[in-house]
Length: 110
Image (cartoon, rainbow, N blue to C red; front, side, top):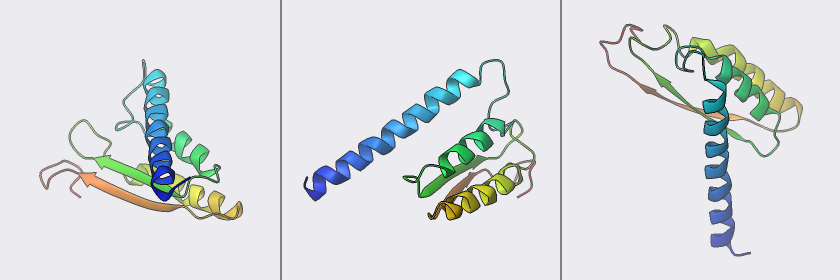
């Protein structure tokens, strides 16, 4: 397998993983608050992914606003720390990158 083929395969696996996550999330949110309001589903998925030795990066997004959690980052801090510990205990490492979408006028005042 060439380097290009290997890179494309990894990209495809990443895209399929995202699609898989979105489809699982979509099926589990019926009749429940959206994950940007209630982080329960995100917490569960983060812990599950931390157990997978092929997962080395956790990408998170946080959306601020009137219909979002009052503390979206705080909702996940404990579980991210636990996920990093889980990865470490299995001999791996879990890097975390996050983006925040919001303005100074959002009620979270971050």
